[in-house]
Image 1 (cartoon, helix red, strand yellow):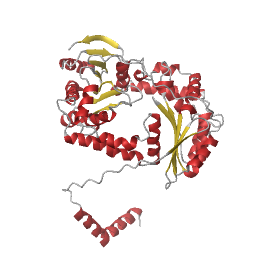
Image 2 (cartoon, one colour):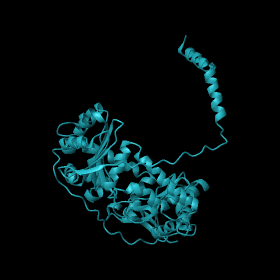
Image 3 (cartoon, rainbow, N blue to C red):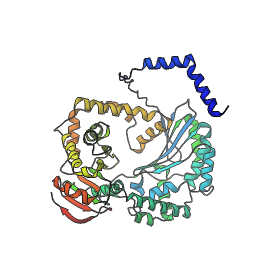
Length: 491
């Protein structure tokens, strides 16, 4: 009998069995597709407990014991990031350091590091972002100590081999070149530069020039200043005992000596917002236009944080948010648009935007401006909008604590972002206290239609005259670097 015949016979026998037929009938009778299933109960938030101590080298240690699954999530989190430690003319340096930390140590080559980690069934992740960084891994409980030993070697003894730097530089330049061929990639460079100028870390972007200027000495210098225990918080979550894990960490990191301190998050003052202007970047032949509309926003410690989160949820986060419902669902100008506040230690940006059908660039801009104006008072939030926005924020929070990695990352963010330790316990209460009046107030405060930067990257020959005809704002022509070229078109 062939394998095909055997499978056919097996299927026929199973289908003919009474239990199979009965099961099919029972399921079809129980399922009425005309009835919308009832929603399940809202998830409950269970915030774990943790203990916090200080190691001999000055690093803080935070441990959350979660017995049950034999897993351990480990992170060394650093307060401060590229914005605080990267030279202004070497943007991209922090990313180079994070990529190359595992390229070799005085004891292991990069290949040996990778092989040793694979044998343990885990891997190391190194990230340095704009205002924080971390080295982390997830391991089984029995592999925690040997994985930590590899991390300690990577942290304490990196060599930054020149050939790896040359390879990374070449790859990065190719990536930057490809990014400049995409409207969204161009907008990611131009929009922050328009808002902040390159005098602020928030306005800078990695470029071919800055990448070409990075040397191995730069990597070593950054490494020595950044990877210091004085601004590190080690967080451990999982199947561990606090006393045991502290002892293991002290032993593994015995050579990581005292040094470093918490960085300053003082940013250059931002210039007063200009009158609303359209900054048009020409990308001939672009299949669509990329919109970035926004302004300088508040820092994370603003007392308006919760009201802004609720307001923005209904404006541009939910699928049925005002922006997405109008521009995607009703008018079909885009596959999806939205908005967000990049809350940081300094004044992060507010941005609304998305990818827009070229022929509808002018129409979409009109609708963006309409929604930004309406939420400030002409069309205040309804009871349903307010309830949905709050429910979305509150009910999504428990997912952050659904895994050991999620728990560890959530705890770590409290310390890297400078939040109160009871932040998660109070989150639902703070969100629930936001009123419709609060939503309108913060929209009026932070979303001024008369002081917006509107960056549009697209085929100028197809969209400029239509954008000018909207009479929304004067048009300034920029190149792909965000520098002015050509004339200013008045509305």
